[in-house]
Image 1 (cartoon, rainbow, N blue to C red):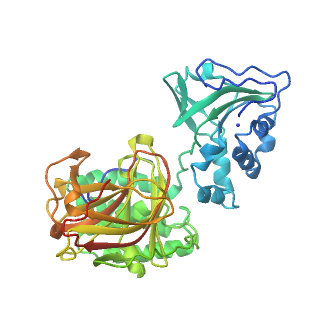
Image 2: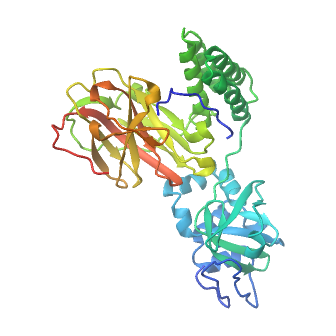
Image 3: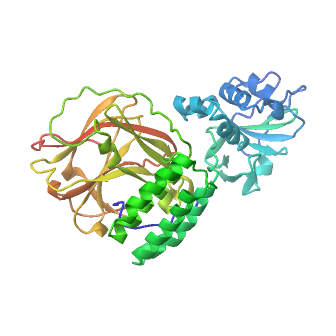
Length: 453
């Protein structure tokens, strides 16, 4: 689906075997671990487990070890080392920095409940409040206890000051809403319906008013330099004669703030160093990223437009664009995308799209839309990536499958009609993603190359 088809509202959006303890390894509901004659505190139980070393290190780094050794009682949903590994080394390293420790502490508190709750106590609840002030949904399926998106692998591991349930993934709380995000959520909730009903001027006016407030006041988390930059950009947009263009330009800023692309500080993080693939050009270059302006032509569109909570951002360094973030399956979400328009004529004489990418082992989608009726849908095809390996992807335009609102339609796209390209992460998996893109070309395959998804 093209980014400009609709303006949708955005709601806002601690164990192998312990000494003297027999663990209920099956984790079936109603099964409990047999209490040892002498139980340690929750941190001590975690240290003895052999499966929770990362959690122990994180608790110490966040300064929570003393609190979890207190009288309690506490119930802890404890992610295994394998669960933490799913976050990726880069994410874990960032959480252990001085800047990341407050976030780490909040994530860990999201796994702790005041009180002692065995599995049999939890199966009768729909949710439970955590030490972070957040709520964890609870459910059962096939005799297993589910805590949000995690499965309880081992239930009822006793400690002197509470109880531990071993889970298979790290539970990430919903990001705290900043004053700016709260204001912009209201703006989108009110402006998007106007846009969809044809009142483009009204939508643009609401978006502009909310963004003006953020640029003028110091109460929304943006520093003086950031407010000045925002005010300058808003002044440029105000000169646009088309209310539709103004509305989408304002919305791009709003989505950028939601996605964390607009820094609330005077400095922003420096992207990790990149390397080039070594693949030689072989067609008409559509996007090469040696010029910083090429990366600026792309924008992100996230599942937040439909209530989801996935993230995504675009950065550019040393001739490579990096699209990274995290997908979340909450609120029926699960996708993050980057997209850009292209002028006519770039695919003349070509029949395929060639990408040089380095991924993380997840599957991505290449998408295209035409210059015709935007309500006719887009054209998509999945391509795999090999973790940390530069790969050449050849995607014949004829292999792109026409879809609209998740429904497969008949018809194929003509290369000469392509007016926009998209890269999607939408593999029905939750977790961090990272895709590096060196170039996108229009190439001629003469029908002898096919793409096997």
